[in-house]
Image 1: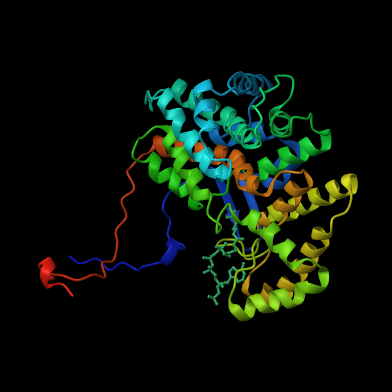
Image 2: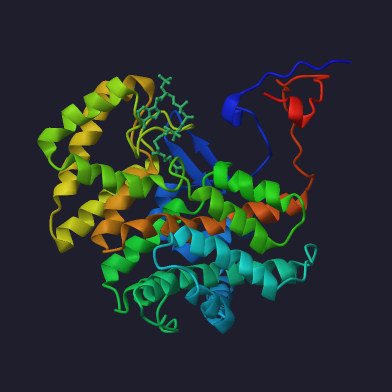
Length: 380
Ligand code: ACO
């Protein structure tokens, strides 16, 4: 029997899994994690509480959260061999490549694969959530020629990361805002990097390989890399007056305007709305920024010209502005995304293991059949 398959480029609209982790309504601009609206999590939760929610399916009690935070604090340090390995990385390398290599290298130390043991799952979750920020901060200090600094047990997850990155205890508002950024980026249904994590997970390999493959996928400019490109684009535009001609030129040349458009959202991404408010708070405290004015004008002009096609700001549009104000180097924006998204990837890894079948889609063959083998001396 011949089965007719409809080819959908990019698998648009093709359900590849069933999941209860998160939900997006792209027409109404709604995002929920385990049924809880993202706005409420951004307002009331912390990143680690949200990670727990995503991975174990419900909000932790105070005792459960305390133990989870304690375990993560305990595992934040890197093995000296990982730090030694990082010393061999070129300073000019992209931090996402460093992160991918370090995440994969964890598999060398924790190679036991007891995927049906809840204690093994929890240890892997804790290790990855704990160590990924330390890996990002260590690469940043090492490429400047400094030694990485040790995590501080008196600082919470986000404050400690900013401390390890900048070697200074962060401002309280800055740390709080960074924590909210992590919540907003923690999960987003079956996007490219999550799909990549799930495909890798479905082979029953170790969780470090799962996260390494997701990091590699996130790095591309059409996915996590867009927030870096947004800042480059805003710098290139340079002034509010240049915005309109820039947009018109992009439309004429069919060029992408970075930080706009989304496969699922056809209205403004709810995370972009929350991030915009956070950016405003930061500007109020730490001073105005010309790039914010350019961004506001850009949003207005793009809505006017492309809004009818459902092209509005996505999460990456304002996240770059927030990170810039927090003095995070531009090429670390995607690693910031990875620090957050590891929670979602781990949630999908765990869900995949609960009802696993290896991914093995089909293809529509467009090549030749019975083609002759031509000896090399006769080839033109
Ligand atoms: N600027 C200008 N035109 C756009 C944009 C944009 N940012 N996004 C989509 N379009 C246009 C396309 O040119 C295309 O037009 P056409 O039909 O005339 O060829 C149409 O809208 C549909 O575009 P697709 O690429 O088919 O849409 P898709 O759903 O595959 O892509 C994507 C979504 C990749 C996010 C796209 O909007 C894009 O490239 N945006 C810019 C990069 C970006 O901001 N990425 C971050 C996404 S969020 C995240 O990953 C966390």
